[in-house]
Image (cartoon, rainbow over the protein chains, first blue to last red):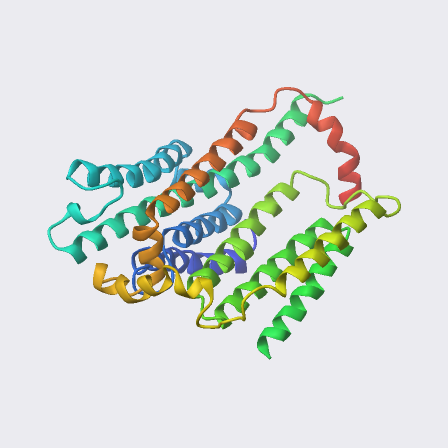
Length: 149
Length: 187
């Protein structure tokens, strides 16, 4: 698909919009429909569109695989540690009230933090799964070139 | 009226998915099915669920199915005959489920169990408790936070599982030989 001019131009226009929409769903999730899960999926979809048009290697240069591993673990850890912070600051697990002075501020801080953790994990895990499937194909092709019958 | 139209389309597409042997077409039909159910959720004013269904069902799962189809053959094996036992099991289970719906409380009625348990508390208290206008976000991330954390861990575990299966490079030409007749089919 790399040679198709229409796809390239439209993707160049669309990918920033998809990413922006993902960020909007992520951080506007308390006011409008959305949240970490949907935002992660939308951001990953933008990245996959990039990978489909510019190739997997170019996409892995944007977000290297190692960074994905780290971010996928970082997301769930951010969630779990936010929960632990509640315990350390004198509440129960995943209790957001002790995090900040002011009940509303504390709850909103907690919700935004854990949703961000979910978003990061979902986005990177979807990217990783796509990477594995897409790379398996080229690995097979490389194998059949190495061992001609 | 819109509901009935959407549900009719969904039934038609579900039958088409079962009938088709072309897995690429089946993947596309599944995407349409998800998009229709997203539209149905939007009609029911469930914005969060509609957004999730459109993004996950119609978007990502279709892409992942297509990524798998690039590795597998495009057409399903023709299976000979019909499995009467399976048909019987499906018919009995379906009949039992339809019979069970007769016992469900009236749709949208105010004194349903779903409407009188914790629902009123969330509706009345979520804004005073945390100042978050989107009640779904408040319930998911704060009242039911441990559930959502479990979900995040499930996603992480899914990534680990795919890594365990596909993260290592194939070493022998075993896969290639099995694939050769399939490529003739696809072309």
